[in-house]
Image 1 (cartoon, rainbow, N blue to C red):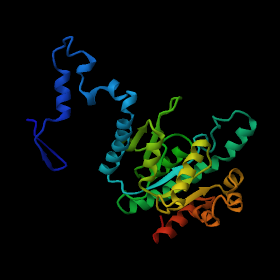
Image 2 (image 1 turned 180 degrees about the horizontal axis):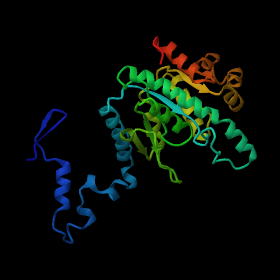
Image 3 (image 1 turned 30 degrees about the vertical axis):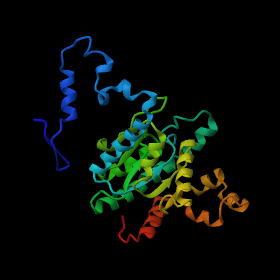
Image 4 (image 1 turned 120 degrees about the vertical axis):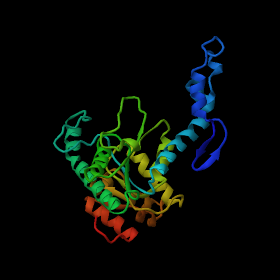
Length: 284
């Protein structure tokens, strides 16, 4: 029987998965073994053609959206931050000299704060149904690992949005396996970070973190997304790296744009900002 139910809707047409299996069982002849004979949706070589980029963009957006929707994830707390920040007590693997080793070792405190912040968000999430304020990270090491680990500490699910990089990178072990997603396109990945965001917490990091910070900030500034709390952990770091006040003084941003950013140094302070913004009265 080919007839099936899809999302409770009767569908009498042939099932694509079943047809794929049937095609694989067909007799092996010169004709059936030709690449041209493959079903288009089962032909990886065809799907990777340059002309198919618009289709791949759509597929990458849709696959993750379907997975998150089917998991019932309604809102998230986004955690951005450096992959090179080590867990306290561990050597800074990315340091290239003594100065970097000293800086990264000192920055290990942000691993602890990220983990604590994720615990607070996840505890609040679990107090409801575990589908709101779900922690989402880039799925890698450093601050990302700390975020997923904090959720794991309290038994909550968390999301990891990884991306294929030239060097091998596996998702950190604390991402919920069923919510571990991988991307080819940075742009689609960033869309998924923000599509359910109730708050954005950004820890010290490098170019990738800067990219994520300024894209998020630009969308909020221009009204392209809701004004959700955008929280920068590490006031000393950020005020040294980016002179936001200088931008306002020069006139390239409005003085009021500075109010889009909150600076904190502790997980408790960050959670308090979220509580105030959303009128959350219960403690996490």
